[in-house]
Length: 225
Image (cartoon, rainbow, N blue to C red; front, side, top):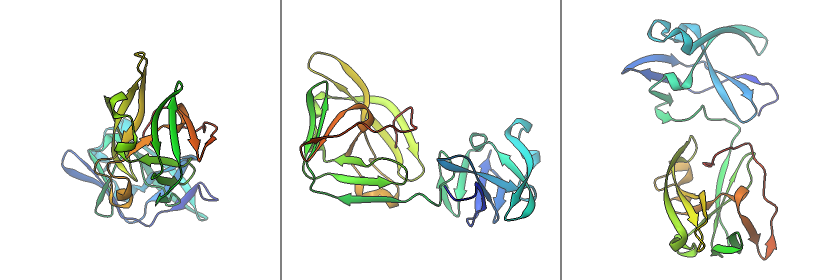
């Protein structure tokens, strides 16, 4: 998050509803309404208000770098598709202060659930994302696939793409939902994790190089990071 919760954006932002472009601006305003990502507030003159339901917009005046700017906050989900420049973006506006690094590693990663080892790998790809704990993406041969069960859960990430999930079913029949996920066709900046199995470290017992790790605490209530 920047020093100020309000700043000028530098991307062209458009949004489509019902096959019609209703937002097209070169001067978006980024507002951090909470710490984890910004919301676009758009100049009034760049929004076709007549094409939007009244409950999908909120007009206000913001102080942007010392100048008052009349803007409209548009409900993200009221649009069929948002674009930053010419690329579609999902879930929410991308944060210009978020960085993703996916690095090959030789660290020894062991994942256990209720004392049962589910994954054991010395060739993880570690994904480092701003403000989140490291995520360990593991080759499928290093995961107990016999204990994984396909889940109906699907989530979207504006930086990585669409994730699908597996639950873990232990030999005693105990099921733990959505502990692993994968990006089968991630966005270009996250190609290194394509087809690997990520583990929800907030909900498993993790050992790195033989050392037990404390479970991280994050703001997420559901997986998909």
